[in-house]
Length: 339
Ligand code: AHG
Ligand code: MN
Ligand code: MN
Image (cartoon, rainbow, N blue to C red; front, side, top):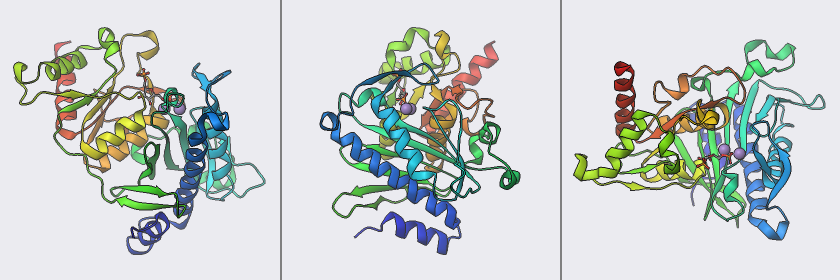
């Protein structure tokens, strides 16, 4: 039988000296939260969890019932363990310091409780994304602040997501490779089914919301035009396209069989900085993709090197198979030279 998540984490701690006990607890609690969220999602109409609320989140997006439920589950499952100083979520305007009734630790966690929430009501895959940082050294004598979270993605100590699809899976990195676990519902535990996930360097599959084509910048327009022209336009192969509107599902496909994902900034006023959130979506996914041998850029720079200036800031995202990401990077470079 495959190793359980617990076994995997203990071995990482023992033989590789890779993780501290607190980080092991953190991943275990995140995994437990995801198990619960997956369970609630799977009830669907039977659990009265579908549909939207009247409320909007801090980014002005209509909240789904499950956005709020999953946010609560995640907070409750993670705040008591003594390893965290504070949490931050896509669905909360400000950070959530660990309440005084619990001991505090030195880790910070950022999360997107339900990614792809427009897919919940139509029964397509959604996920939960998380990113882990160490708080600054002086954290023990004071309350955590928003500024503590504004660290570039290259400082993440762990990242991952759960995907609630035909199977429920947890995919994590602790900074040395990417590991995928499948939820064994009979045993109630996560089993290591995908050790050392790698993104194939080459691909002939891309993912982009093509309904935004008229708003794209030149490098993106050029790249997609070349993919569409395929062998007629000088590329060695014809290309295939997929778009699920759930970043977790698109990234999971890319981690499994390769591909390139683009949600670039474009000329729409609300998307000039991109649509996806740097701290809850782009950074954790960029860390996973890089750890699996792929590339992750904004167009002009590596996502993991972007210095955040706000908790909910958005960013342009292009990630996946290394050869395609490097091709797109060259198109951006050429556009800069032309300016
Ligand atoms: P969320 O549900 O957390 O707001 O995220 C949705 C994101 C991402 O998962 C997906 O890639 C993208 O939004 C889809 O956007 P479009 O509907 O504009 O294609
Ligand atoms: Mn999301
Ligand atoms: Mn979300």
